[in-house]
Length: 246
Image (cartoon, rainbow, N blue to C red; front, top):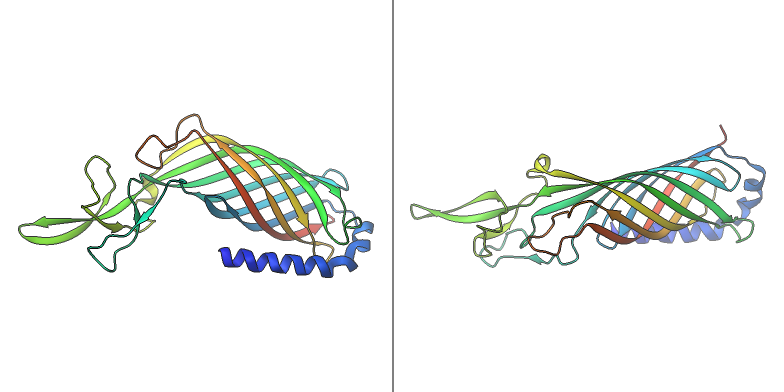
C-alpha cells in the first residue's frame, strides 16, 4: 500500500505539471456534482475512502463521505516465537484488532483556483459525523501437551491464562471476524485538498489533514490501561473521480 501511495503521488505531481492547459476549460464549465474514490494512510493504519459532493456554488460543495480504516495501538510490538521457524507474528497483550467505519458530511471550499496556481486547485475540508469502531477479538495459536503428545490449537487470546511461553504465533485476521463488538462515537476532520487533472471533468486529488475519533467508552486494544476514549491521526489521502454537469 505504501508503494502504491508513492507511485500515485508521483503520478499526481506529473499531472500537476501537465494539467496547465486545462485551466481555461474549467473556467467555462459549471459542475453540479462529483464522485471520488481513494486510499488513505494515517499514522496508525490505512484504509479506503468514498465521497459524493454536490456543488452549492462554483467554489464550494457539500460532501458526503464514507471511510473504512484499520487502527493499531502505537504501543503494539510484533513478536515472533523461537519455537517454530514458520510461526506467524503476533502482538503479545493484544485483545482486539480495530476497524473504524466513518460516515459524515462536510464542506469542501476551493479558495485558490487552478487559474491562480498554474493547474492546481487548493481547497479546505471540514467534515464531521458518526464513527463506529469494530473490535474484533485477537486469536493466537497456542501449544499444549496431551498425554505426552505436543500439539497446537487456535484460541481467543486471554491475558489471564495465556503467557508468551504458551503462544506459538498469531492466527488469521479473519478468525472470529463476526465475534466482535461495535463502539459508536463521533469524529471531526480537517484537511487541505490539492486537485489537478489532465482532463477538466476528472479529479486527481492529494489531501493532507487530521482526524479525531471520540467514543463514550474506552476502545480495548491492549490488555492494559493504555486504551483511550479517543484517537487522533494525521493522514494523507489520494482520490480519483469525476465531475458531472447534471
